[in-house]
Image 1 (cartoon, helix red, strand yellow):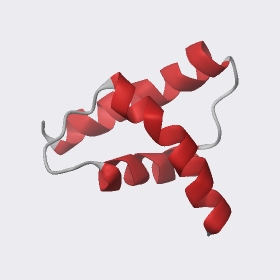
Image 2: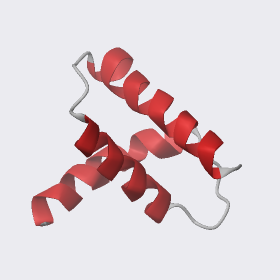
Image 3: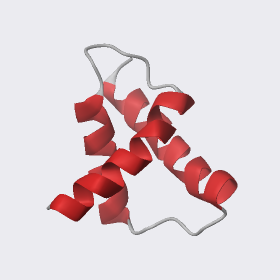
Length: 68
């Protein structure tokens, strides 16, 4: 998957995660950028960016934010 397409998929999943699953407003753009970078860094090689994979990264991301 090319980088621009990956970013588009992650952007869509970010919105879906907050709007449909959490029923909450999306955090600001900076948090979204950090989440996208985090997800990409957690992925192994060419592991697909599935909805399940991306959504499972949210708790890990929150823990990551608590540590920085």
